[in-house]
Length: 141
Image 1 (spheres, rainbow, N blue to C red):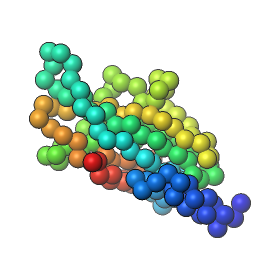
Image 2: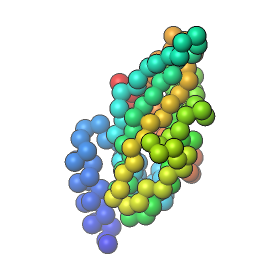
Image 3: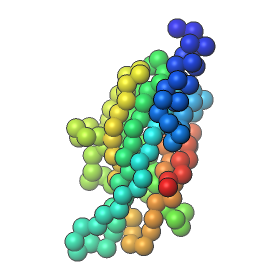
Image 4: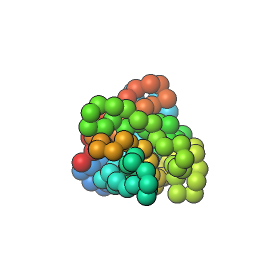
């Protein structure tokens, strides 16, 4: 497969997924190409707790030619005051309770990331941190 063919496949997948797609290019994620579609943040609270839980549905598609390994540690959340949070370790990343997932080329992953925030805070941005330390900032609606 030539570089031009790979790029055309990536563009076609990005167009098919709609306007809320962010392509993480090879410079940022050297072992593959990803397309991400984010759902709106959903807020919930357990009875008797003051903290909020924020869950964000993700659809991550590998639009490259190499398998890509993703886990919940790749995602961070920035709240409306600029504080950064890791995912809540008591939750699982993927629907079948996998902590780490390898996405094969032209396959996708449906997952949910969950964060615990202090009361009164809202989710502003989702950060995707690559294995090389590059950071992709994704604005949340």
